[in-house]
Image (cartoon, rainbow, N blue to C red; front, side):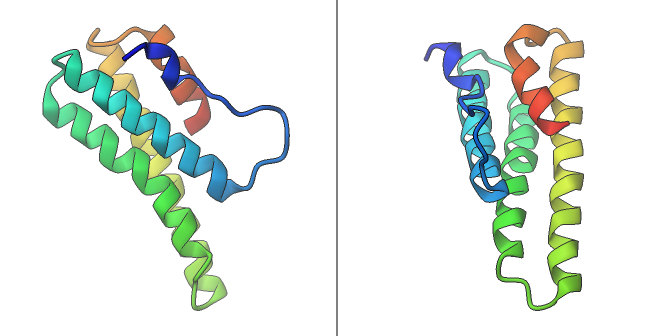
Length: 111
């Protein structure tokens, strides 16, 4: 698989948070596949996969929140998952398992 598929394909147009986080999850899945093919330790790749796909799942779940408090809680969880995803991306880069250039777009999206 060519690595270009991991780049952000979002344009400057308005995109809903649900669509944006789903596209991010797809990019994380593609990154995970690439990591698996690159022989990166499976545990690290799986941590990235879990946190990176959880962001969109929580945003999606928030749309069916039972209360304002529940809605806010789901988005707070999504924010925590984004921070965790950034952490795993940074670990992979700092351990020199991947280059900053390859995951730069993913890191920017977590911010």
